[in-house]
Image (cartoon, rainbow, N blue to C red):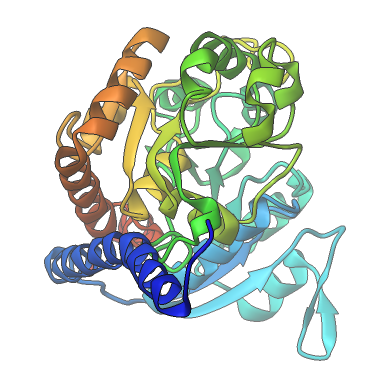
Length: 381
């Protein structure tokens, strides 16, 4: 666009800036009001007079941000928190290098909490238990890796799984203390924030191209091609309609939580699609346990104050109210229909997003989850 004079250019720049910035600022103001209400309404946060040894997953990204979120949420809830790693990957503590077993010996915690547990030797768990220290593991990938997790489940005093359909499995194996505890979200990572113009989209999806996702996105590709979209993740080149969507796909990228939150905030609608329980290419789930519980992205998306369109999981209704603070779809056709509906009905979309933000910040933080865990292990405060 060419301008006849500087004054015309200034006026056009002001109009463009206002058109871009005002809706963003107005949205953030509404989100701030909702967040303040959620903070006022959430349960009090007590402190347990206990010492906890938290053992990280020992896995790199994307598990490391999860470790960080749990550590930051757990520290204010206990008298003392010690962070350790696996025996075969000792970490630095002060000026010394200490293994998990050494940390347990020196600090004598009231609880050793292990995330995932796949890389922690079972002899270490046994030695810690022999000291009279309670042990707990929080499984992060059920039901997809139950062939592995079932092998070490009975070695802990407490089992926490993010999948409700796996509780029976571990109980049948003889685990006396098995509890359903979904993951949550970290409000400092996933929150409403200004969205740069470069990330503003109608629809976004962040995640790997598992085959069930490929099938859906291939079917809705002609519709998505008419929208401003962002798809980011690995394996998306396997789409039959890849060329149709390629300009709007960030191929073979794995976003950090901060980058993911930026992308969520830039979207009007974020699609959530759980992976399939029976994908033989990537699962170790020979028992074919179906997933019923929401994934962590469910909470992370809504925690950004964005409207979420998610596939249906039977346990979702215990966390959100469909068509009130979250929206579900049961087929590709319904997904397309609801994308069209909520892009047109902007006020309805915004109200659902705000209600989802409120519910998430009030009920679904890692602090909420860890308060539940500590109440189970040590009793309520």
